[in-house]
Length: 288
Ligand code: NAD
Image (cartoon, rainbow, N blue to C red; front, side):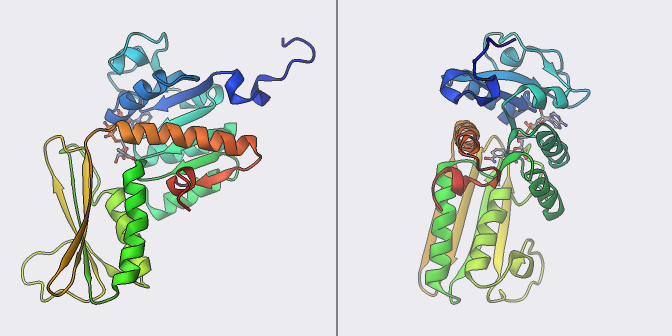
């Protein structure tokens, strides 16, 4: 029991106690990077990690699975327990898993940082519902560079006007399961909105055979997959006689992990100030 007059742990400022961070999907490509990022960050502690039922990583030490020295915590499959004990949970898993995790974040009123892509509108609405009790950051891309590119796309599409055609090209590693990438879709949504339309109306996701000429006011996508490409996105503005290309290349997953941790710490400070709900990376990075 805490001594009389001591501040309960939940109310202590972050600086006085380690920030306990859980990683769901801890054996995944991003999960391992997140474990390494949390373990390397002063003031933060890896509170635990989970994996899907049946994963060969279950029972392994969460540090060892991430290529570190043992951290003394085994990867389990009890996400409920992880949300109960951690201050914040980082989640780069799969859409159905992230939806279930958001409900646990709501149940335990915790911070949940979701980087999973391929989350559809209905699932996004359900996550927003969970954010009435939890504090959630949802962003298909957690890098500073991509979030700056999102801002530039909005400005460029608005400034260039309807005579410029917008096409989005993305490439990722061969293991990626959703297409186009969440970032490409977000770039397209922003471009479409700046053109006064929506991606549902303007998006062209495949072209094959006799397609006829390009329809004005559309946003075209091309998706490449192969090798170990971390993530590349180009937004191409094609005018008559000139072209502008805005390209972002991620060369390491470390930016995404660093962004996720920054997001967790940002919303922790907002919660301390009494603000909760749903945030995106433009809030975290102060780009709004
Ligand atoms: P991955 O397949 O390597 O890792 C996903 C991990 O989640 C796997 O280990 C899988 O077993 C685990 N998992 C699945 N269901 C689970 C559950 N119910 N409970 C616990 N663990 C579960 O994939 P990845 O390359 O690490 O990417 C993961 C997700 O993150 C994808 O949606 C990807 O597009 C996205 N991503 C987002 C960003 C960003 O900045 N937001 C950056 C990179 C990747």
